[in-house]
Length: 374
Ligand SMILES: *Cc1c(COP(=O)(O)O)cnc(C)c1O
Image (cartoon, rainbow, N blue to C red; front, side, top):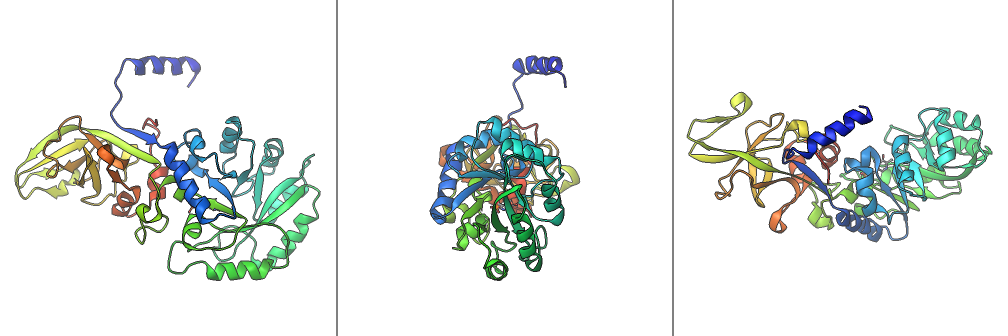
């Protein structure tokens, strides 16, 4: 879209009231949640993980709430550029390292620290011309089998990296597969420690679940989901348990109501049939906004701050909610899909995710570009 058409779109918007759906980002909640990570890992330096456009919150929107972090971790080089454009001069870590040898030039230019997880990335560094040696995070696959050198190959990778003039300090890093669940992290910590015991350098181990649930020593911890107000180990624990606050509210309004009679059905596939007279509301929010189509029947939602549930299938632009607990609701009533509602009400994103068979991470990342963010 050229600048002209952009301006024209702007003009059109100026005389149209937008569809009522919007996402609100809460900087003070981000700051509160990050402080919870600090309190749980008081001796560690703290990465705020802002990959995937700050888990869907928007790098620029999230930045003011997260700026007390010691650094920002992400994996998209364009997002790193956006952080530097915000005048963030502190550490930025590329969690997956570079994807192409040419990316190393941007690392040098923007002073990006980067993970090294495979032999090819060492080859690229060895061939890279730079004035300034790079700070690297050497990754061990201690059991997740995703990225990283095996414990057996780790030491020789370190030796090779350490001999490169392109390399400054080397931090040792690994990632946990089960910090949120019953298997835990002990087996991976043991593997990591055994294979790195005699190597110098700082360590970076914990994600949100490990920060909150396991007191493992780590010089750098990596707080992602907890900062955004979702419990990494829901439903075992919820955000109240961990004292976290929603960093995003997705809200909309009722655009219609319907009075159902027994036998009336709601939505595509007639998935819901009224068994008694019942009033429902139609909400301007659907799967094209990022609301999960697989949300089960009776997925929680707040209408005027009162908890009720969805009825029938979610469609592209609309969903239906039971108004039985909120008889005063009508067209224009505020609907909270997740986050903070009116009168101090709250609906954790985890409750909605659970009802849709997914996790808070996926919902917050999936909020669609058509939803205005404020
Ligand atoms: C995404 C990510 C994190 C953050 O995980 P959360 O569960 O969101 O805290 C930490 N480390 C790595 C390597 C990641 O990719």
